[in-house]
Length: 443
Ligand code: GDP
Ligand code: IMO
Ligand code: MG
Image (cartoon, rainbow, N blue to C red; front, side):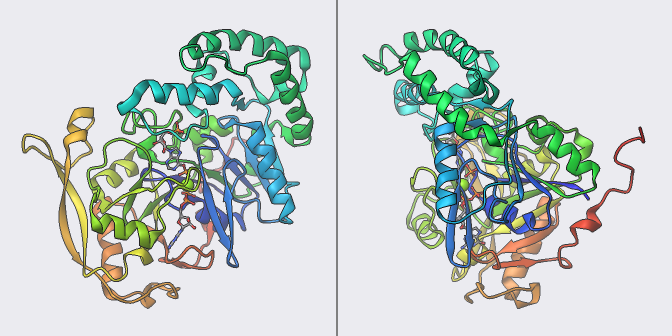
């Protein structure tokens, strides 16, 4: 069985959690491979809502192997809180495993994140202030503290000592007395270590074992392509790579271990935080989409900016991820609009036309979407379960997206519930995706 990577194809919050939950039933392992608790992945099961920040979206299946890979940055306070909250709701978390090589978010990373935003003032990124950027910065600077360090008091203390001094200096102008006491921090993190020890493992090996046994592995992305630190709208991005290529690095597998890459995109676009957004609807219509779609952040509760579907950006996301399929979520939110607009090109400041996503920051900042108008539909589609249940205009919209992006639409979301999906091709035969070539040369 194959490796399937699920990634956000826009600016995050596309509905990745719901799709991962749907596929996870057939999977042996689900692996988060980047990001941290900046993510908020929602699953609605039998009317009950779950929001995951670090725990992979397969955890609702009892005992399912859910892996937090080495590429994730972990705030151990948030993770233990999430585990406790799940257990309090009767969820079996015994299948959870945490990479010993994943980096930790430390208290000073949270302070630095806020200080960084304060310093930027009007130019701030609008981060989730969860310490994500500073934690990845320390990882690259080789000052990071890893999950395995939680299990050795001497090493932990030594590493915190080395990391903390430069932080004190940077924080001084922002916080007269940053509470960065070495002793209490070490003790708190050792306590997290005791609590998490049973979950810590060589997670790459667990993934290899599942792949070697021809089982399905789902690589769960966080954020979205346009928030990618290399390919997104830098500097208004997150500090990791949400694109599919990062699944290899963040889980410990090779490109040949990923057979399918599914891009999740809303039927329109949202963005939380600052940065360019060529199809933004900064008006009553945008407000209406926000209201109908319930577009408020899962992690921070902030109102999400809204706009029409952007084919230029989606085509770009398809390329940088190597998408093999698209899942279009929240199609139900567009019910009741007479006309639906789709952005097919941008107009730049000096009238230049762009059909490809512009690489230059200032071009993108001034780019305005230009639209093709499609017919809308009036019907509520929340109960549709097959392509032919959908109104003709909704089907035409999906066909238009697939044709323009050059990637087939495999799945459509018509409501937040797990069952509110339409498979556009035959029922999911994930086994049929199996590779034709042997996975590895025989030993
Ligand atoms: P993620 O971060 O990509 O997992 O997405 P979020 O959970 O942050 O945001 C997606 C929101 O849309 C959640 O509230 C989901 O419950 C909801 N959702 C997912 N798919 C659909 C859909 O097809 N229709 C509707 N109406 N809501 C959906
Ligand atoms: P999921 O996985 C939407 C955005 C923040 C900010 C930028 C940088 O739920 O799709 P960070 O805290 O990462 O340094 O913030 O990235 N952002 C997200 N937006 N969904 C997310 O995750 C996000 N994670 C980060 O709003 O603009
Ligand atoms: Mg989210």
